[in-house]
Image 1 (cartoon, rainbow, N blue to C red):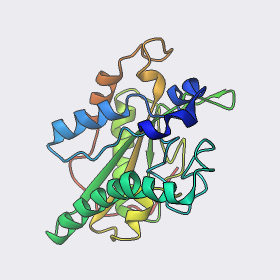
Image 2 (image 1 turned 90 degrees about the horizontal axis):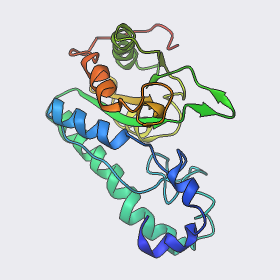
Image 3 (image 1 turned 45 degrees about the horizontal axis):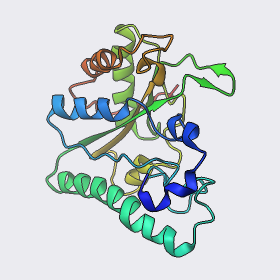
Image 4 (image 1 turned 90 degrees about the vertical axis):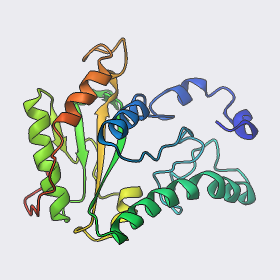
Length: 227
């Protein structure tokens, strides 16, 4: 949390440390994948309760309840300093690759809370994509099969839908399916919690197994249903 705005979150320590404030384990997974695959990493350590980098500028959840009464001038400063540079860097990297006539698979790594509204989520690994884009659908279908073979409960477009507001959705509006695949990888957070029920903090090993299941070639298309 940037120092000038920390006072706004006084008394919100527990919320900041919860799944609302950040994605436990996601940065470590993203770093490991970038290292293993030899690909660039674009990441941020800003809490989404400060500003949500994965939401569009007009989205009502762009700023949390702690930030919504911030004066417009301050909000503009926040967007210019944190929100725009992050998104612009991702888009610029994709654009350079597309210009070089390469097909880009953009993996956005997230983690999700195992319990939502009092119910335990059965999904362990989620792959989010737009089912209208055939190559994304084919890629995720193949990746899901590999993850299931590795022994995990993997679903497509759960626990969230991959075509709703987000950075990958924005980038799909800029780049066609033939050259850009935007995939959001969601891993359940209890894999990274030493006290969690599922795998007692074996997050790094589990993330490695998920990576090994990743397709090494880009399928042409898949027009079947996404679930």
